[in-house]
Length: 100
Image 1 (cartoon, rainbow, N blue to C red):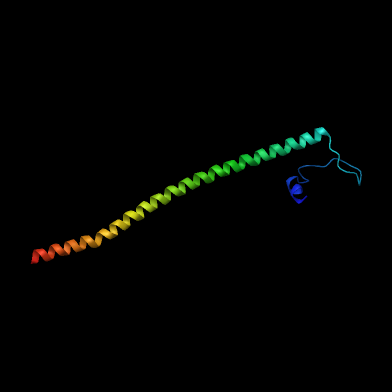
Image 2: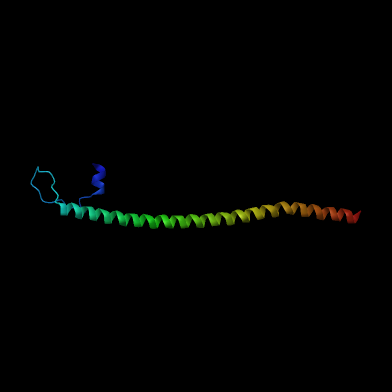
């Protein structure tokens, strides 16, 4: 019941005039109009959510691209950091050989 009330708020669906204590009576026309209105509302929601989904998918792709770029940079820096001590060691070895 609570879900139905939130799905069909009173402001969007005015109820027909009725005497106190009588159940709701919708004509076929009113029912079809209500169904049409709800369908249009759901279509609008679907379109909005679909656009949001596409936007998030695009952002995800962009984030993945940045991740790969940063990973490659980090990997390259790591390789260079490991090369440096070897270059220093080779230079020191060359000096020792020259002086000997």
